[in-house]
Length: 297
Image: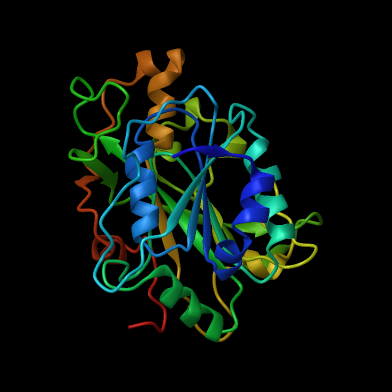
């Protein structure tokens, strides 16, 4: 995958991007970059943009995948950027919002995998078309922490074959505005490793909700807390019934807890009585209440 500039991708491949939906993957390191790209491409995104540091070397064929029956494999483009800057993803997403009005966008990091109801048989475009018919322009996603059960075999806590998640321990609190009043149909969600090991996680990073699927429009911006400047787009459902939600199954927190010297020495295992093997299937996430099919069957 030859690196290009963001300007050249926007100018040379604008027709593909405007077809949408478009996914942005920010590679913080080399862990599971190939599997991340392959997963997002198989979902049916028209384009998957990989933002990676120039020094990151991908093996030949990284991100290649066989398309699912009846589904087109999304095109992949690499863009070299210094992803060590924590503010970079927000700046890039906001630039894409401005450049692609009307296009559905999504963003994630390496070793993060998007799941939505029935994603095994239905494309992300089909799902977003239904969501838009319900007059929704954004979708709440829960970041579900994944972790390897055996840290001796997977010292960085990342293992696709031995991935586990928490089946319990999730909760929500009212989200308030600047005056302290609860915001309508908005909640702050917590759980997973951020909750169990909160002493190692800064308070402003403990939420697990993210608006990771939304339609770009003029004036919209993504804020550093993973919410959007249009408050209606931060709601979990419309006023009259429940809507679809999705999940991003992510090794990112487990990986960070193993990388940080303070937490690495304090954590011998991520397993507890609430652990369950991840089956890499949307039905498991729906059964656990970690995403909502709404009116979509």
